[in-house]
Length: 189
Image (spheres, one colour):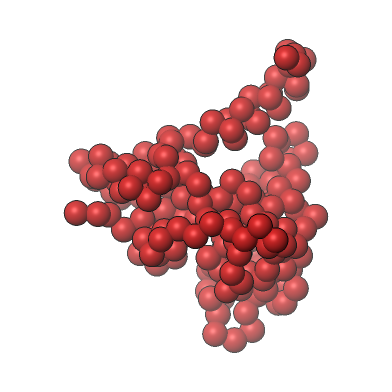
């Protein structure tokens, strides 16, 4: 039996369009929807199993990627956005609860200047699909029985999403590079 991961993943992952330059995210409200304009293609899009990321109803994983903060602007109903005051500040609609983006507040964080977005909140075609799965074991904290984890990982791999219990190697390398530069131990090859 295949486990349902996320509606956008279960229906098949699409690859982004080479000339795609962004689109609009919309919350789930039927009227007065919050809109966020994104003027960039998403990077590092992935399925996330953590319990902090917003997931659509019934999804086991969230779908989240990053864009430069300078390329994101709230264009409609900013009064409905709430900031949860965390290291990754999540901006959600106060009406429907959908998280539109998350922003790193600390300038010393390696991901400062990047916003985390949920591309499934956009009807625009061309977004890059997910390329890996992160924090996979965390779905246990969300209620998935540990006995189902082999099946969860097999389902992710069948969708060509390598499961990690942290971030992808490329993102972990970026974090380690940032830490090495901050400590003064970074060396160029």
